[in-house]
Length: 252
Image 1 (cartoon, rainbow, N blue to C red):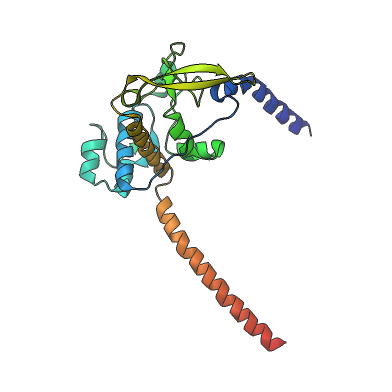
Image 2: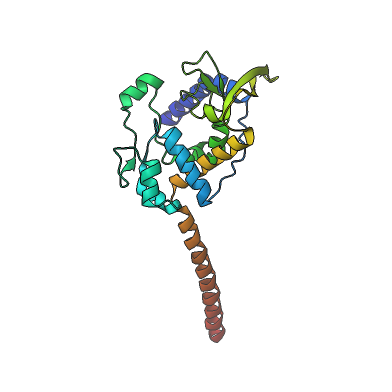
């Protein structure tokens, strides 16, 4: 009983401490846009290229080897030419050379490994893909932050907007939500990026699709096998049911 009381007290304290931040970040309710996740290999390949170009400088994917990218249609030569840095080999894990201590000094916190980030966020928000898709499209300029950026989904995020050159620079306006909190309204990029809004959304969708795939590269094969397992079990059930009826008919 004592342990339960202490745990409950800690949870209530956490709610009191973080409630103002959550209210500002989402106006009391976090709205996530539906991520158009795709298993199309061309989209996954584009997502992998974006991941290597924009994410792998700071974030690692230490549970995945470059060789694994052959499962989405890359051949060894393409991986070597487009996705490997000079010192990397195709059998290496997708790690970064930045030391953890340096990362903490520069960003205040070491960037997390992204191998299973979509699955990790799913445990917190119901859909990891929706969270990542919304998050990567919700950065705005904030000169009060050390990085110069903030995020509507994750208030005071330590991560800068790595994709700003594609999206452009969004700004934000804070408005009262009528419940003591603030609603953040994003304004379309005042400084345009290299992509239109539609093109940027498609690029983020491809990147998120790759992050989802990376969390479980064998998911498609598992689902394919699962269909046959279910068909087998249904057939087995019909067979055993008929055998059971035949057996009990003779007894009665």
